Each structure stands twice: as structure tokens, then as C-alpha cells.
Image (cartoon, rainbow over all chains, first blue to last red; front, side):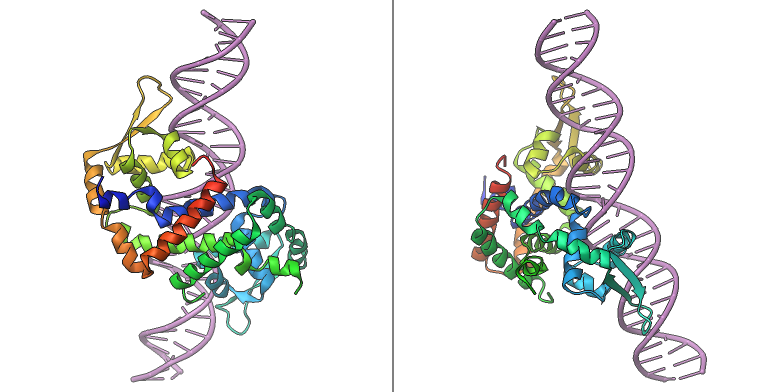
Length: 147
Length: 147
DNA sequence: TGATAATAAATTGCATACAATTTAAACAAA
DNA sequence: TTTGTTTAAATTGTATGCAATTTATTATCA
């Protein structure tokens, strides 16, 4: 096995570690989020909107690194669930303004126990988790300076 | 803003860091892999098979943490591209044995420059990348001990 | 002002992910 | 052996992701 073969080993890929770990973490969320009737992407989207709503699809996409192809159907779903509203901006009809409804705001209260529930599932010291998160965020900013 | 609001901020989520970073890294691969006519998941699958073929769908799924719902159509695609073969195990017809074809083996030679190309794209010191990878693999093993 | 360019969402098409179910084969036990 | 159980893939249905295109609206400039 030469040096270049070594480079192609799955376990040496940064990408596979991220890819697999990301999916494993999502898997931990699934049963917890099902109690809120949210998928993982819907949850991430609601987190962004709970922090700041009255934003456009473009704004939201910049925050979540998702485009309208992903967000449009997802936001229509959240609208159907009455968690958000989707209204054209009167001043510029190209913009769609997303706002959290009262029902959506109520869900935030329910969501507040999600991080703790996930913490239990992971069974890893919080300091360790925070340290890894900070490192990954550093990397993310290097990869996507606009964030 | 109280403590629980803080916990729901997007930037404090380990999951979002992983989710976003994983997609950003995949994005870096896309133009490089398009020269091999492979998607990211197809590439990961070929990496696993170049390391060890003659495996079943189940084996491969355990390695990649993917199920037959994802792998079956993906492997059919790779078969159509003549990179692999899919044959029932004569000794136990339930098993489907996946093997890399000659054409598939040739592609490995072409793939050997992918890691270096990606390294250029990332523009981050290799030691730093390796350190993060090792940490994430540690976490992955805690989340999925079977790996 | 009228044509052109730029912008924001939406749409289309393809490729995952994954839960749940189905199908086919092998195993187990009465 | 025959019936019930287990196992491996395949299938079905839903929800992303994302490139490429389309549509609608606004901005620009000749």
C-alpha cells in the first residue's frame, strides 16, 4: 500500500468524518424533534427565525447556507403548519418576508428543552462538545467567510 | 435574553456547525469530482470499495452508515457506469456481492489526485485539518461504537 | 421613457437520506 | 417437513440539497 493509497482511505478523509458525524448527530435529534413535529432542517430554520424573523428568504438562506430551491418548499410546509407567515414585501414585491406566528412562538417554549435532551443522548461532557463546536465553527468561517 | 434562549441560538448548536461544515466541504469536492463523473456519495462509496470489495450491501452500509434505501439506487448507478458489479452470492442468494470492475480500478488512479486538489481548495494547514479530523473521528466513535 | 440588466423566489430535475414496508431466501423448531 | 422467524435487499414515500432555468419585479441607463 503506497502513500497515495493511504490518502484515499476512508478513515483519512476529513470529509467522511464530517459527513458521517453530521448524519449521526441528526439521527440523535430525530426522536426528540418528532415530539415537536419538526424535521431537523425545519428545526434549524425555526432556530434562525426565533432569533430574528421578518427576514427574506435570501437572508435566511445566507444564515443557513441554503438556497431557495431548498427553502421554498420547506417554508411552505412551515406555513402550512401555521408556524410562520410568508408575505410579499409591499415596498419590493420580489422579497418574501418570513415571520414567526404566535403558534410558532409558542413552539419555542417547547423547544427550550431540546438542547438538554440532546445532551443526555450524547453522553459526552459539555466542555468537550463546546470545544469541538468552536473548532468546527472556526473551520466553517474559513470555508465560508460570509457567515 | 435568558439562558435558555441562549441555548437555542443557531451559533451555539453543535449540530448546525457540523451540518453546515459538512455541506461546505461537500461543495468543495463537487467541481473536483465532476471531472471523475462522480457525486460526493458515489465517491465515498468508491473509496470504501477501493479499500475492500467483494462485500455485501450490508457490509458497505455498516462502513458508510447508510442503508439499502440509499445504497441500492446508488449502486445501480455505479453498475450502470460500469465501475462495479452487483451479483447475488451463490451460497446465500439474499446477499448481493459488490465488486470493483477493471474500469472502476482505473478510476482509482485518476482519483489519487483528489485529496491534493481538495487541499489546495481548502487552503488550511494540513496539520490543522488532521487535528480536527482526529477529534471528529473520536466523537464519531463515541456516537457510533460499531464503526 | 423604453429597453436592458439585475435581483429574488419559484420551479424543475436529479441525487441523496431514511423510515417503513415488501419480497425473497435461509434458518429454526416442533 | 412444514410452518414460523429471521435476515438481506429492494421498494415506497417523504424531505431535503442543489444546479439550472424560469418568472416576476425592480433598477439602470441610453
